[in-house]
Image (cartoon, rainbow over all chains, first blue to last red):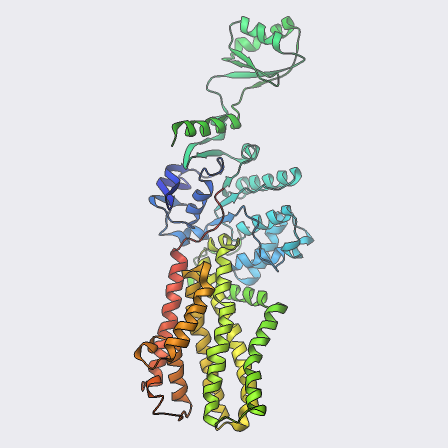
Length: 310
Length: 272
């Protein structure tokens, strides 16, 4: 399958400041999380993809269309939810969404029908008839989200979609994103600082640092440790169990939360763990295959970029 | 979500979709314009030539019939329309380019073109309507003193529309060329370009809209005052030539504005 976004040596300068530095990447279809610290170049990359800023050098293709030559074709297939609190003063929620549908060339009645349909999908009730200026942050996020997809784009670019949402609303927003991907087949690029959001919704993750994409990989592959490992939680202290496991010849560590991670955990290990627990006089609370933490991966990428002094 | 005709539906022509979107933008802008402050400004604009004409008609020295044409020309297409466009063209385009909604609009398929044309048409419609309303009342007040009020109204109405379209296109260009200083540049140009250079009895005045509007006024109204003294202020060219030049300037300014808004980068939001 052809990549959704292809970047080849993309460089973007704002006067003398280099915001993107020779970025080369092929982002596949599906849901991709775009992570990076402040100033990493995420917003510039999004602006490049939307054709809002010109490339200083390099080439980019979005949905098979070249930038900037085919930017109009790209824009008709792309939806964008900005991070900023942007709304049209004096319009209600449904009017705002309808207006943006009409700007995409959709006839008036059809635009209204779609606006209602998408606001239904976003769980907006009668408040859709209220002036947007009176909305809470959560409702404004819903209107922005609805407006980004009212013209039925193939690719959605969401900039901090859960920013400012309470936990319940955040869960609902993530469910909508997953539903759009799995049920409607949309590809989605999510720029966010919230790592659990990426873990909850994304198939792929791209980590940006110092104007470069430092990592682009499937999330399930990233989460898998390089060698088989198991994680144990115990009731009570885990030091005694750790000592027993290490005596048996396994490399094991314990973190500050008392979780024991055992490297190279094979079938023989699984067969003997119960005996070791009895020997250490602890009760096992959980035993699960170990996963790399996205936070650790993210921090490692950022530190590596920083050390490389790009 | 997928069953309806999408914007990428090949059955719909690109031009039709864009035209529909421009109309939507015009309607949105018009609706946004229907605020009490905006309507009050509109009324004030429309009424200030009426006030001056009323003073001349009832309280001042009675002007000669042919002077009415020049006075109404200077008051409405050359003052009121300019003021209206200074208020409604460049600053509105500027505020959109600086505003947070710009990325929303700019990422739609022809969003930049649509916003540019929608705002231009809105400014032209509001200004032209104010001009026509003002002109109608002024002609009604001064009709008994005019030689042919009907011809006068038709001529000045055409000039109001041309003035709104012409200066609107120019100010729209300023709006995208120097968004941060658009109003200042527009005021500066109006004072130096249209009011100073435009009234010079020299060839250079032919680059201004005012020169061509003035010539059209002379061609369309029986304009006989001071023919010898004002010879250098007019050209002998037929009306169609002036109309062609005005149309060329309007199309040229709009085309340049559209090209600029498509290719230029405008500040959008801070780097996250």
